[in-house]
Length: 312
Image (cartoon, rainbow, N blue to C red; front, top):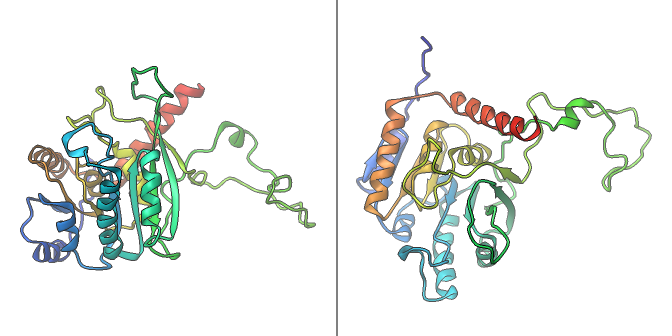
């Protein structure tokens, strides 16, 4: 029987947070969930204390009662308010990731530029979401806006590297850069590039299936994000025992992934039903503990299966 390596708890970290923020709606070994307004919540957090913030806020597209503002100006002012608080509470090495539709996030990036001058874009690309309308191009991605507080942001790709493609594996050793726009012939043409044993550097397009009805992860929440996606994002921006904050809890995917990877999480959700959904999800993870490598190996197996289906 394989022994599971359990989390070594630093109870003082969660205790200190709860002393500052008040009694949590839900608490487990890895994090605290609060039921309260986003801005009120963020204002109570100490400055320079959070390594990563992931936010999947309302998109202002009017698909639910909680996703409606009187105008785009009102929506952007609300975004500006919570993003300013996010900047304050981030560590200097920290990253704020905001997920949404490109046409909305384009405005959000502009109003956040004063606080966050360093920005990158990621694309989450999926192929398995149905679209019954013929009126426009079928949507197959959501954007992720990466906002860095300083040039010294934390980034680690060692555990999110990707399998090389077929051509690279077939012809692994070759000269590099001589014919590209960045290359130059400098008399060192004998130098060769060889593949990294842990895989290729991750690209800024993350191809991961969306959560759908047959998925074991599927929960009754309309915009649930896959744990595989969240694990990849969290691994890139945090180390063990760092704190991940998500101010829009939803189905709790951020909290689940943080727990699986031995990070601490801090979150909130205003809806009673979703608070219960999150609590149940984290309780199930507590009752069936698995080490981080279990989840990383699962992601690798899924990715290899997708490649096999696609390429044979």
